[in-house]
Amino acid sequence: MISKNLINRRSFLNYALALGALGITRDVASGQSLERQLRGVNLSGAEFGKLSGVGYRQLYPTRTDVEFYRALGCTVIRLPIRWERLQSRPFGSLSSSDGSFRDLDWLEEIVTLITDAGMVCVIDLHNFGKRSVGGPAVRLGTADLPAEALADFWLKVGGLFRNNPLVWFGLMNEPEGYQATEWSGIVQSTVNSLRHAHIGNVVLLPGIKWSSAALWIKSGNGKAFENFNDEAENSIFEVHQYFDPDGSGTRSTCVRDGVRRLAAFERWAEVKEGRRGFLAEFGLGRTDLPESGECGEELDKVVEHLHQHSQIWRGWTLWGGGRHWPPKYHLRLEGPCCGTEREGVVLRALRDRFR
Image (cartoon, rainbow, N blue to C red; front, side, top):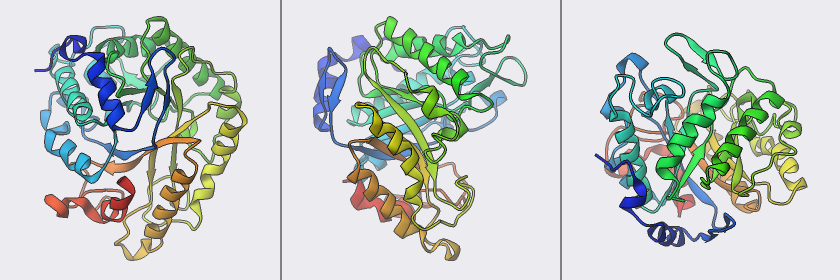
């Protein structure tokens, strides 16, 4: 079991040394950082399964998983989680739905494993802007789930990890059913709450319409976040983009020059100094399938583009990591076995990019 009080477990200096190992120089007072571009994967599992089956330890990533991706050269892991598993009722204490603290313990354990390995851990609230409140899922901003519930959750999680700058907070994965102005207001108030509580960790700011880079302006995200303010100046816009024909990530084929889909967000980010993006989800299909022959070339183009535009892109995490994806899932990163065989065709293609 991992201690609930991480400040007693490790001093802030230890984490500053870890940041240095990543090539990050941080001004602790201002929250500013100058660093190499982060590169890594989404490591799924903790968000899987039915809520009635909470408590499945095997769904959470393990030390072996962390060591595998660290050995590849990853410097960041995005860790999807489920809100209901960490906070059984809105505004309640952090605990599993059965009243135990097992999921909380497991979260702390995997986060500690990731950051002890010198990697950034992005805790990704993978709830799409809603959660169950004793029944069907409801959206934030309703009577059953006030918008303040999101801030309450992150204040409690933030209290656990506030002294570990390698832990970043992904406020919400792909919020559904909101207007851009409504959603940006929820994000602003949540970040304000964290900063007023002197929680200074990096926060990733998602937009509506799947946080799509291609739709960043058309969706209204650009206008809605135009005047966003973080008093700690330690927030990054979370962007997603898939490169199959319709941009949904549901097909194993890739379009040519799909990297152009990043342009709308990039133009918006360039307008104001200090705006940064983090490509938290992207995928291009398996390069070993006959119908996805162009995906390998396109994958390399995308990653090269991100590196060349590191003044905008703080980092990236490829979608599809984790042992629990079906073997035929077209965005699965891992092979069926172990050792180098576990890499899968996409990871093998990216091996040099992780270093």
